Image 1 (cartoon, one colour):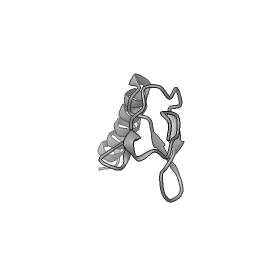
Image 2: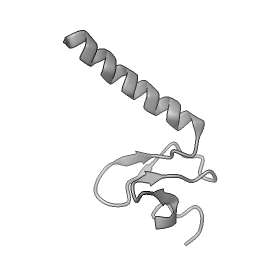
Image 3: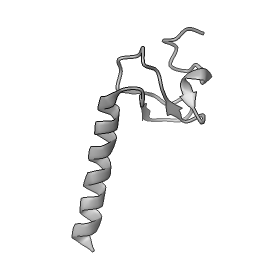
Image 4: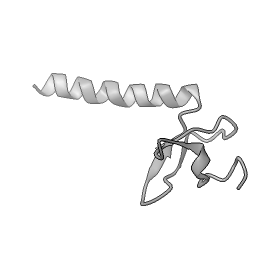
Length: 64
């Protein structure tokens, strides 16, 4: 398997967090099941995750 094989188990931290600095994609297909996962090796993925968390927190605070 090469460094661009998105199913390569060595590219997943704790088996669920995709981490590949050589892959420019922000979102990649999950190893199993349906859906997508974030490439946590890039700064923009942390910004993306932070925005999602902020929106969820704002909704919870606003609705409570």
